Image (cartoon, rainbow, N blue to C red; front, side, top):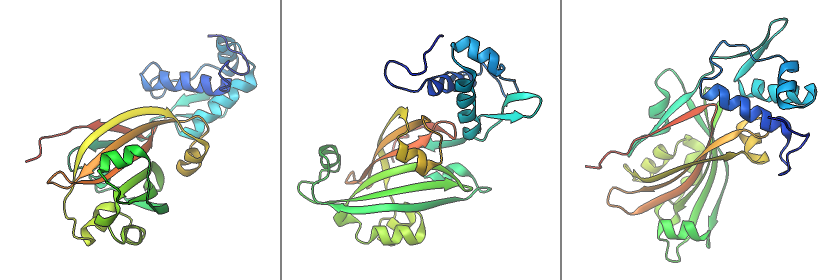
Length: 246
């Protein structure tokens, strides 16, 4: 693979190199404990200056995928990946286990009289407003998700204040008398983080996100919320399992 200082699409070459090395680590071609090739070897492989390689490796260090050991080189680390199981009633707290703690930060909220068409369609709003929540969730202090969620506003009066106080959607809904809700649909995609997402999730530029779009309903099928949650691909693995709802 030979590259120039910037790809034809305008994407920085160091990010392309980091992405290729990230892919090799993810698929097992570079197992935990293995040493990355030297800067000179990588520069020759990709046809770039060593400074470009150095920037790519620094990005992987920032993600926790590799670590530099003075005098020895750069090695693939064990890393800690959260396996988040998404089922009909699975919550994030169910995935992290008793030895870890989850926290949430409300970034912003607004009542939208005219949300985007897909929100209107999925929530069957029919002219009713939607409540939009923006939040970051962390596990043991490390950000693991950045979510944008729309709720049917008249079903969740006071939700932002409750969420800010309790730090959990499920607990906040319970306070409002909604004791149960289910995941009705889930779609998963991937893309690179925006600058704002990288800042919120404490990620290096160009990090890959898993993007989960979901619809939650009340047990009788009434739409409750529709949202997009972005997970850092280096920190979270998704296990989507939809069981039949009794």
